[in-house]
Image 1 (cartoon, helix red, strand yellow):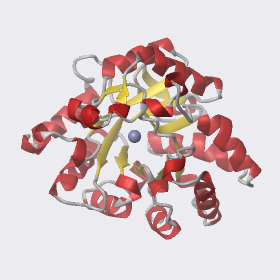
Image 2 (tube, rainbow, N blue to C red; image 1 turned 180 degrees about the horizontal axis):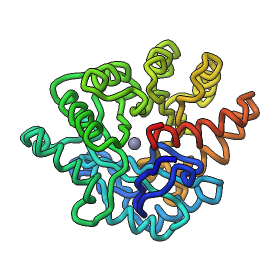
Image 3 (cartoon, rainbow, N blue to C red; image 1 turned 30 degrees about the horizontal axis):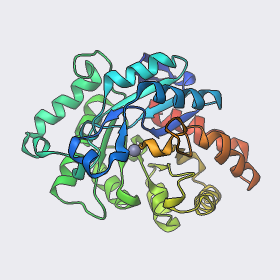
Length: 307
Ligand SMILES: [Zn+2]
């Protein structure tokens, strides 16, 4: 079986266990963003460790830390969190989240320099730490696919082909997912090496089926975040996708990139929500355990090892 790079080193696909495919553990959001929205300050190592521990206690094993370069990825802080909870696997990433977060340095830099930097993160390690990224990120804005969006997606495509790590993208409110797959495909990336995030922000079955038919993975990461619609919608959509035969292409996460989402900061739903609350509800609403195992264990494993 193939291997996957984590912050603690390479592990076998069979050691991934239950995976949260889109999470945040520790990052330093850009100062302008923090002024705009102080609820992006998520860098207290102890609190992050507490939250990660709750995921492990609930039966989780692997977390993908999706904070990209432009979002203030904090590799040393993330390693400290991981060291405090050594039984959890933490996968870190490289690449860029979306044009809105990128500063001028991204637009002024040569594409080849940005590509080289991302490849270095994957092959040699991040910022001289020797800690290697295992995922490439790219993303687009709300209903846009302009020059900036394309630049980030093109970098993702080239890095994927050079290094063979999979891509997880950001979609803004679940838009432009199909266009992302088309664009990546045009740039030589096979759809099954790509997972789209936040699709449940746009609970549109027709659109999700169209994406699934390409062979790409569909990321649902808003359980418990009622401001993005009730879980009833999410569960209904999941059931219909599963009935349509796409149960092997869905990944689950919670994308809790704000302190207000964490119990360790006095908020919620908390990092264990998917396992302690959402999964029992899926079972009670008629989704089989074996499909839940696919979404949390088998699908992320296939996606990560590139099977
Ligand atoms: Zn995120």
